[in-house]
Structures are given as structure tokens and as C-alpha cells.
Image (cartoon, rainbow, N blue to C red; front, side, top):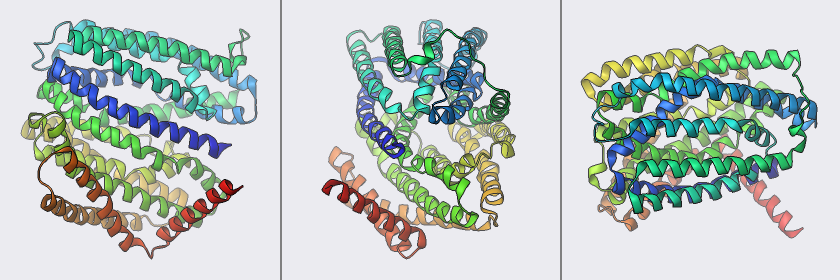
Length: 511
């Protein structure tokens, strides 16, 4: 049942992502043609400002969801109701707090929006963003319940329908009116309807949560929640300072239009990340059980397999993006929407550094090692902010993005492996960094060779050339990596697992 639910979640997730990506590219093109790059910059900036509000949530939802797994598995309805009632109450209070914070932050907007004078009704735009954010908290307890029960695919289908409706409606508004306010109002109205419909679906599946009787959680669960919320709060602040401040700094020190240009790059990278996330995330469900039940040696052997898969996917992604992202933007939007080449390379460096953390971070999280590095995220965030503020004066946009790379390399890059190797694998961490270095060199050499071949074979940025380049960037590096790793224990493990899985599928089809 657990495997079946996981496959359903992954399948609907991938299908949804394909449709959303296609609609997203069309919508972005229409948005730029209708409103211009400044409005796209405002859109990206306010999204980051909203992320500040998310710090208030401070991991409460994640902690409650974690505590829902066991009572759902044991059909302990009383505890489920107690947690859901707590979640609903807390998020109602948070919605009010966020509205208050939003009003306090509002006067600061004029100081962080450089060269945005051409945009009118900024205050109305801001509060439409806030309204949508507040709506998301009203049924958050229900989304957490169905996700914790591994039935997220039920809402995913409905969310896909509403995503399609919303995108088509927004495109229609832009084509007919070129009115950003109406664009946001339509988005808000449909989002409210979506929340109401999804809420009814959850109520129908879990009718027992609608009771008026009050339930309370036990002392141990409460203490666990408080401990996790404190740790997650620190992680959230650090995460925001690293990943949530770039657009704000760009808007403040450069201009809003540059936020729009940068957001085109991040949109494509985020779309690619959404495709590879289910593959890398698919290991997570079994790793927790692995750590709890197997020996240190077994844990380490599986980690090496996950580490190889992590490298393979991220390396292919970087090579793919380097050769296709800029030609795609030129074909899709035009050369005037390209950023400086150095900026592009730093974006890819940050993507590689973040992506290569996936394997070690998964083992760390599944082992429950949250407290050990609760302050490291704050240091990472502080270093990122300070470095960005200093470097932006000398290097502009490149300087802001350099700050992210510097903060990662000086903190999380080495602290996470040290924590996991000490507490989970019980071995020297040097082997991790040696392999990381080998992987990095391999990515550079393979990327250089693949780029050379792509440039020899194809030069122009037509749709057909992009497809051919994409094929080359996926096949050539993969073939080279097969030659390099074929005799390794990790590759043989993956090959045998694939053969076994293929055999099971055949047996089921015959049966």
C-alpha cells in the first residue's frame, strides 16, 4: 500500500509538472509581452517579501505533520483530531499575525524597489499578494492531514485542474486587458474556490475531524512539537537569508527589472528541479527505516549508492542547463532577456552546490539530526547576507549570487557531512570530500566535452537544435559515466535493483 501510494503521488506529480511547465512558459511569455519586465520583477520581489511572513510559521506545520504519521497508521482518531484542532487554531492565529506584519512592512516597500516608478497601484498589488497568502493558512490543517496519510495525489489531481483553469484565465485577462490588478484578482478568486473545494474533499474523506468536541495532545507530543519547532525556526531563518533575500537585494541595489530577468532563469531551473525532485526524494521514505533497522555499514553502503545517483542527476542537469538554458531563453523570449555570462555561471554553481547536498541532507534529516546544526543555518544566512551586501558594490548582480556560494561553502557544505558521518556512519568524513572533489572534476571535464560537441554540431537557437542539444547533453555524459562507474559496487547495486524491479513487473503482468 505504501509503495502504491508513493507511485501514485510520484506519477500524478510528474504529469502535473509537465502540464504546469508547458502552461508556465506560455503564461510567462504572454505576461512579458502584455506588461513588461518591471511587472515581472515586482511579481518576483513580492513573492520573496511573502517568504518573510513564512518565517512566522517556523516549522509548526512540519512538526505536526511528522506527529500525524503514527496515529494515522494506528487509526488513533483521538490523537489525529487533537493535532488537527491544534493546527487549525495555531494557523488561524498565524493568519492574523501575518496580516499585522504585512501592514508593518508595507511602508518599507518604497525603499527596496529601485526604479519601479512606472508601476502604479503598488499598495493594492501588495495586499492582493497578502490576501492570497492569508487564504493559504485557512485550510492548511486539512492539506497536512491528507499528505501525512500519503493521499496527496487525491488533491494533486484537483490542484492540477485548478492550475490549468487559473493559468488559462490569467492569460485571457492579460491578452484582453493587460491589467495586472485584474490578473491578481482573478488568481485570488480561483484560489479561494480551490481551497473550498479541496476542503470539502478532505472533510468527506475524514468526517471524524469535523467534531465540535475538544481534544488535547499529550505531554510527550507537546514537548516534541516545541523542541522541533524551535529547531525548525532557526533552520527557516537561515534558509530564508540564503534563498529568500536575493530578489530583495537585487531590487534594492540594482533595479526591479533585473529581478524580472533573473526570475526567468530561476523559473526554468525550478521547473527542472521539480522534475528531478521525485527521483531524489524517492529514496527518502526508505532511508528512515534503513537507518532505524540496519547496521552502520549497511547505511553507508546505501548512502554511496544514493550519492552516486545524486551526482549523476545533478551533473547531467548542470551540463543540460549550461548548453540549453540561454539558447532556450533567446528562442523563447529574445536575446534582450539574457543575463551576463558570469552571472549565469554563478547561478549554475549555486544550483550544483545546493543539488549535491541532497544525499547527505536526506540521511541527516531521516536520522533526526536537527538539533546538532540548528545554529549553522543562522551562520550560513548571516554570511550570505553580509557577503552579498559587500560584493554587490563591486560586482553587482554577480556579487549578490557570490554571497550564496560563499555561505554554502563555508558552512553547510562541510558541517552536514561531518554530522552524518559521525552520528550515522561512524567513520572518517574525508572520503566524502575526496569523492565530492572527484565528482566536481568529472562534471567539469564532461561538461566541457559535451559543450564542445554541441557547439560543433549546432550553433543556431531553433527549436529543433534545442531538442538535438538536449539529447546530446543527456546521452553523452550518461554513456561516459557508465564507462567510469560500471565496475563500482554502487553501479552494480543499481543495475541489479533495476533488473529485479523489471522482473517483478513482468511477473505481475503475466499474473
